Amino acid sequence: MPLNKSEIAQFKLRLEELRNEVMKSVRNTKEAVTQPDEAKGYSQHSADEGTDDFVKNINLEVSNKEFGVIRQIDRALEKIEEGTYGICDISNEEIPLKRLEAIPYAAMTVKAQEKFEKGLI
Image 1: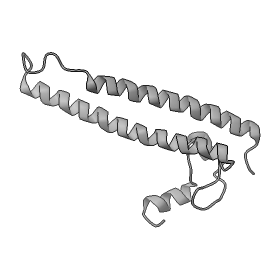
Image 2 (image 1 turned 90 degrees about the horizontal axis):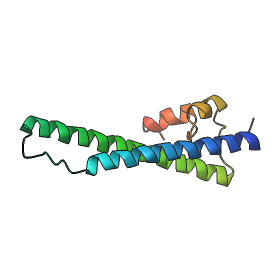
Image 3 (image 1 turned 135 degrees about the vertical axis):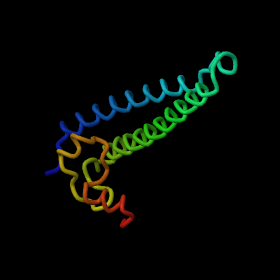
Image 4 (image 1 turned 90 degrees about the vertical axis):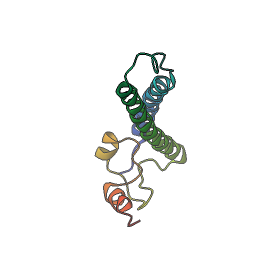
């Protein structure tokens, strides 16, 4: 059964809130990574510098994944505007409500997602 207008409005609000949370996290990570390390090169041990660099690399990797989530959220918001939210991008089948509740930015059914990840689609 297709989603009704009230359900879609709730998902839109949830997606917008989720997008704001992820963007805030990305901004915080960016600030942490771009802040100059004033102590670097003076009293820190070289192993400490390596650890700091490792942490910055991990933060950048997390930010890249968060940007991926933002793109998925943006796609879900586009689908709401297009009137296709809740419909699988691959199979054109309805995405189950339970899946949308768990992952509101899901653009595919589980079956289509599995095929996509295996490279079968």
